Length: 220
Image (cartoon, rainbow, N blue to C red):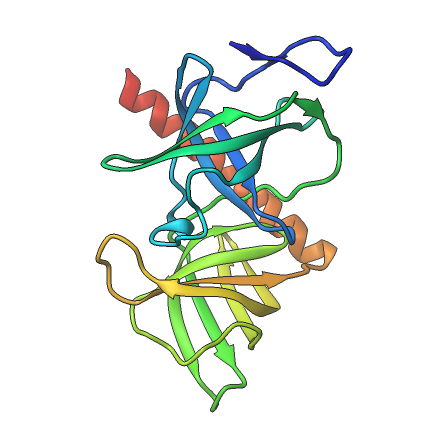
């Protein structure tokens, strides 16, 4: 299925059902989601875990979504019209024409790696599980509450495949873990140097290949 493009441009194809899309939340924060279905002109997306329980995400909010076909990035302004908890998903309708935008965006991926956190807050350290990572930040689950707050400096060490990444960043968001899980979800923002960014890109690529293989095996 295609969506109308900005004036004067041909229609643009939506990603395939099950394909990855991102919700651009501003300040460089992009939340990963999946296109679950297309119902008339509405797009049904999986609800990003980071938004669970946040009243700021209510029907009526306008959000840009984007996806990345080869050699480009497509941005589509949308309006959130419905939030469903069972299953957790969002319904959005296009609020304008789609456009190609070749600005660099960080791809997120990966899960399960151990994240070791060291902070300057009372010499506190913590260990978490990676939920996803990009060249600009990571999200991890810590099963015990911490005393961290937004803006705290954190040193993170993550083992990505066969390489260790050492990252220095700032706490962007910390929230109670969703779905009744213990502990907290922490979003750390950082700017990775090129050698570390390369390790992260290679790790995400390997992870995505593995995910596609698993999807293929489950569908066979």
